Amino acid sequence: MASVGLTGGIGAGKSEVARLLESYGAVLVDADRIAREVVEPGTEGLAAVVAEFGEQVLDEDGRLDRPRLGAIVFADEERRKTLGAIVHPLVGRRSAELQEAAGPDAIVVHDVPLLTENGLAPLYDLVIVVDASPQTQLERLVRLRGMTEEDARARMAAQATREQRLAVADIVIDNDGPLEALEPQVRAAWERLRAL
Image 1: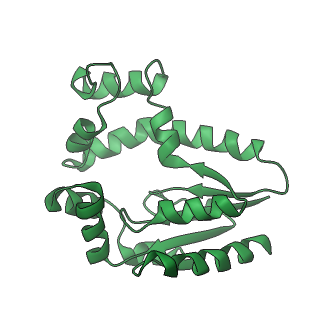
Image 2: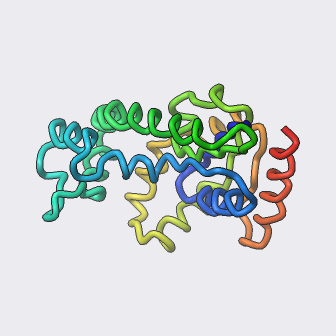
């Protein structure tokens, strides 16, 4: 089994790279998806988040109001760390379960936005970083995700720097250009993974 870490700054295009790798046969373990699962209604994760941040972070259906919680934690680093201390262990436990279930010949790609920030690179056989310039990231967040420029900049500032991410990379995929330039790079990375 090969265990691969995939990361990149917000708006860099990591999700598209993950989608391509999965289409080639990788087993995808998506930390963002798992982070949503572990705070679904009725979970210990949601109970812990509400105990820490209050009922104000719930919507009218009793689900986590992610934009409201995001506004709290991205404005205050200590609150963001507190949230991480609740959610990250739950995500780590579920990720390990999924990797274990993948089988001995699998190439397991862990899509982990905060891989660099949390010092997780040593956990993987290889790390792929999807790289885009800060200007490209900002433009994508505003245009494609509808964020305000201020919100986009705050989220980018809360993450590792481009240089910090590149320092942990075994493979760098440049996603500053058009989508059609991405696929050949991801295909080449997949062939390298298959050779592990």
